[in-house]
Image 1 (spheres, rainbow, N blue to C red):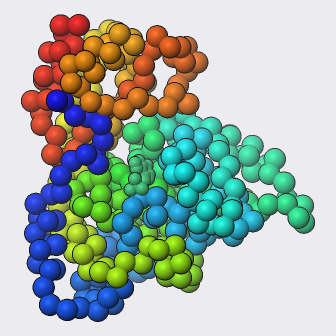
Image 2 (image 1 turned 60 degrees about the horizontal axis):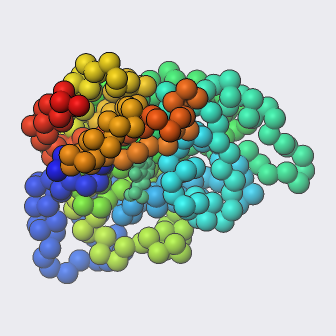
Length: 351
Ligand SMILES: Cc1ncc(COP(=O)(O)O)c(C=O)c1O
């Protein structure tokens, strides 16, 4: 079996597991009133070089939904990429958690929201007395296409969003991969570019289950604790999430793990690019490789034990919307084995 299904299929990194075991003694305050939680929050503040308010949950969907609920009223509109996870793949959790705010999809290119499309969406958005209210913009960093918004691209979106005073949310499920790939400081890619709140993912990059909602604009977090409890996301044994975050951040483990995952994706990408019947629609910038292949190649790979996901064609050119093309996503992690990349290449050579 050669497994490129997701970063979620992989193991917990050893140092993270060790921190959980270290945390597994004595009695401590519950619901986040413990020292480890305080320490984890301080570490995050240090990494982002800012006073922040942070909240820990166990899934990325909860982090996104609680972030959005904190910055969007129930009558609000959340602008987001038409290929975004919050729009397509969270079973309407953001709508549910916001108590019915509307997700408003905006076209993307290479995973990035097109400026002109956002401008148009804001221009045509109704603004009469009883209309829904333009409230927030959500962007994914890295994008759903595995590409990276540069700092000035985020700033440009922020400038457009400012025309309607939108708050900015960032879905950072793979933020570590972005930092590792760009060598930028976390602050440059977030609050310095105008992000108000982010979902800081760790689970895909070596923890068991730990995501942080981080408010850079601390005025916006007043109700978040209540939303956490009300939605069933306030963990009583919070120390075990906090200890994961400590293990993840300590000694820059998060960057090391993400760098390793990115390196393998680059190798995979280079190998796949050699075949003229495989097309990569987007540059590989983090740990995800997207490929368009003849359907027969997909069947051949699956028959030979290669595991990967078929991906939505929503952002592909219409020429690829035909049945004889398959669109696949291959994901690597710190725990992926380079040998699998060479095995896959050999397999394709024999196709
Ligand atoms: C970009 C992005 N955001 C959010 C999530 C949600 O994470 P979870 O599955 O932990 O709810 C995912 C998971 O695949 C994701 O890829």
